[in-house]
Image (cartoon, rainbow, N blue to C red; front, side, top):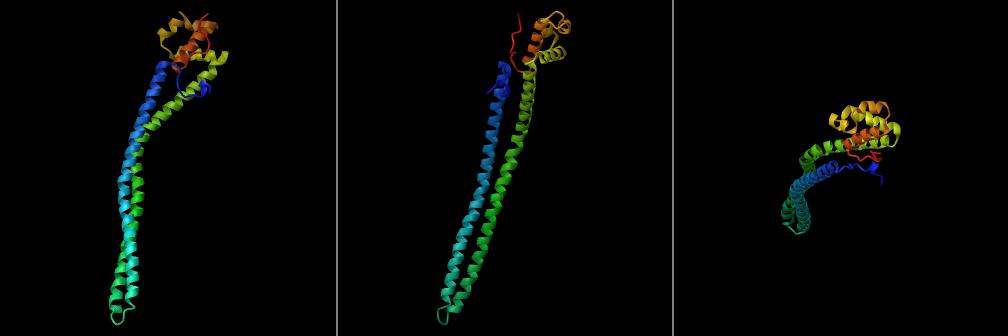
Length: 209
């Protein structure tokens, strides 16, 4: 893959800073994802309790309903035993419904709280990190494209005259503005190289005769 498509600098200092920021951001993301997972797991245990209550009460309700039906067949006293058993079965059904509601609510709440805890700190770092990386990539793309043509190289040299420190400019030429106006090829190439280095790139062309 061409270095143009890689969102990293080619100068050691800028590259080290970018890699360091990537590692720090990755560690930050892992920490808060782990916190979110822990919160989800803690709330999900409540959902497990609700699920167990539902399953247990549902089984008890079935057993009581069956016992009430069987008790109805007992002569004389069947009705006296069957009615309370069926009533207890209905109560167990209500308990099973409450357990199912607890399971659904806790499962939903586990995701909401996990995202509420983990997402803000992740976005607080991810958004500026992503903006800076996109900005660098766009600047690198533009600089590499300009450096591939003579006219683009002259534009980079002009930007260097406007943006680079005077000490750096005088290292290129005692009168860098005149050198640029007179189309001094070597001076323009060196000025363009200054602008490329400021963007984290290495000049593709030699800067000296």
